Length: 144
Image (cartoon, rainbow, N blue to C red; front, side, top):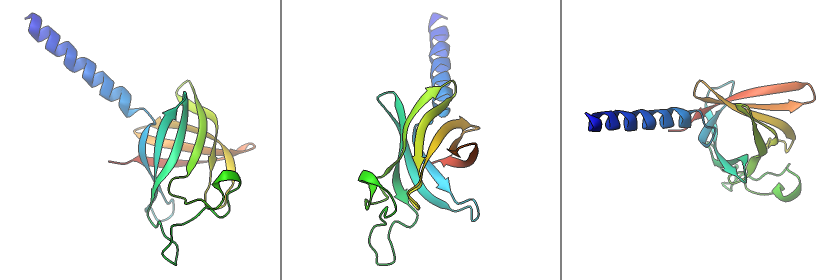
């Protein structure tokens, strides 16, 4: 009987751990074009030094018309003219309640940087960029 109770407790603990892990924003997510519904890129979300970051790990179309890797030509600073695959586009988000806030997201198509907020809702990653009082929220899907 004692072994049965122990086994049930172990299964419950692993089940709770799996449930909690599914709400974590870390891992690989697919970005989806809102108009076509097609996957555009993959972003790896990871924690470093207590902050959340996101790095592009793949593009649906990684090369330009000449067959060379797409570069961030409109970026500024250290990201200027760097390959888009490998760019850290989400930086320095801090956990506040059930959301990560107070960091930034960069759009590699135009090089613009926005304030950002990220949270998991119904197994999907919500990524919100702000300009003043205005914002746009994207829904990213967990990569399998």
